[in-house]
Length: 468
Ligand code: SF4
Image 1 (cartoon, rainbow, N blue to C red):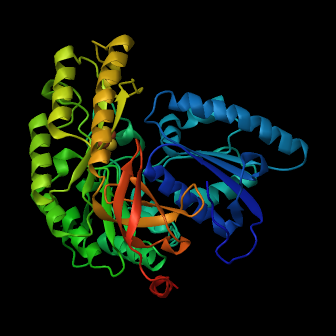
Image 2 (spheres, rainbow, N blue to C red):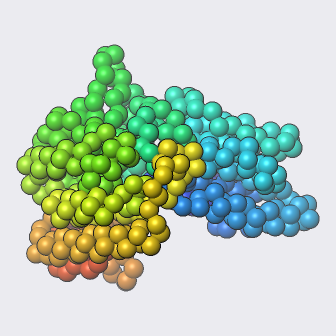
Image 3 (tube, rainbow, N blue to C red):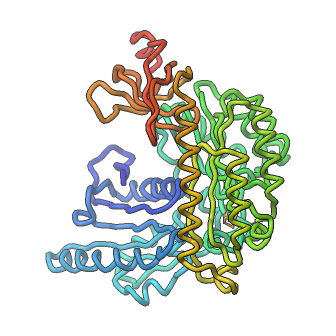
């Protein structure tokens, strides 16, 4: 991943390689770890072989996550040993949710690992690196002091590009039967308003035109305002929409339980709030939703979808689904298919249930056979794929603003994002990067769109807009 040069502009004295698995929050955290190590002289390495320090920032959501980490650690051991033979040192760290969940088990199985740190202790990384460098034994820190993490980490890089991410909330109190997040990320924590607004201002000053607010349960965010009151996410969105130069706002990932009326209304009232929401439903069967401990019904999801589309008629929804949760029967799967038919999704992620050690569902009876899970997943993915194609095709002929992020794959091509998050390509000048321009969608492909520029902003005006 792209790690940062030292803040004083000097040439990095050491090289850092970070491998990141999982969600956007892990990507954000990897950036913060690079930030915290930059003052120690760590700059980016292209490959682990050339690095003085390698961090594996892990994710526990997908199947066999820890096996993949241990097999990577096996390869890194050889690199570390080769370096040692050449009289060089390689510091090896495991971070993220696998580190949190496995803790000391990692150094028991892979004693060549120097540092194991959970997601809430990244601010302690420099101290742990220093101790590891003094060969004071493996450093393990998997505490949950989440408030300290945000207070003590340096400000993230402001120049994230036109689309920036800002973590406002971490952790989860909801304990869905299948999920490890409450065990690996700890209880819900909301950053205060002042810290979020200050970070957003820095991002906009650094060229961000779109900010995506991140959190495991982002719409459960309830942060302390400067006057001591507590704001909800909708109030924060109104505040951020006031920032000059900020054209787009998004937030992810949300829980249906926390979609309150004010937040739904905000979608109709804040033009910067993009008409696209990722709202995981997981199943369309109330029986399975109860077994999952989701705390909502299919009917609540229908009502939220309707109200969002009432507030913002061009609203598109994306979602997550799990098929084959323990106890799921054919009729439950049929209810999921019916929900998908009724709601209609522009995009969705669907997975087979797989047991996560330590989660309640892992020990439940009536596990669904792999063959049944495969069949249900295929059934669901066929329908979701069809809906995604239909949604993309329905965009053809539409006029909309695209936020351009940089060059496309072909010469003379620029790439950007539509309001509905689709990648869009146009033929246009490089000066479009970091700007929005009006386009007409010309063609739809399975995962992207092509478009023609309608209002090409004069290049002079584009240059004047370039942030300092
Ligand atoms: S709401 Fe459920 S699925 Fe989402 S992070 Fe919390 S426990 Fe996991």
